[in-house]
Image 1: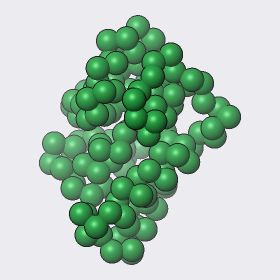
Image 2: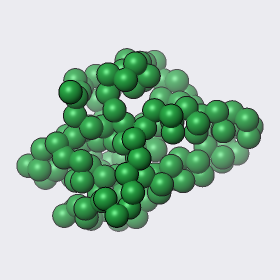
Image 3: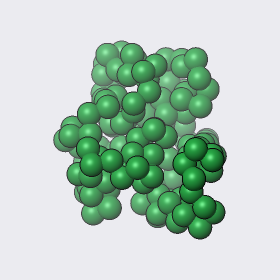
Length: 138
């Protein structure tokens, strides 16, 4: 069984909006259920808000399809199931990803956020891999 996987919003954009070629194997593993992604309502709400921004020019139907696909692939955790991570982010929208990872350890958090990546060495001591490398084996 692979470790639980958390995807920050920037990585979800690569997977579902940009269809980034660098993320193709990661997305395939997710679609083929070789890895299991985890989220909570806060992360879903953030992803929904981000993809609704005009910069992405996604109509309502495309946004709904992206969200439905992600929700169909992800395991949901309730806020009551989350433990507070011992590390704090300046951005409260990013804190939830750390809390999810801390609650699911050992796990992998795919992130492109520099603040989250700076915490990687400390998180590794808790058996949490924070990485921007989409080729990491899960």
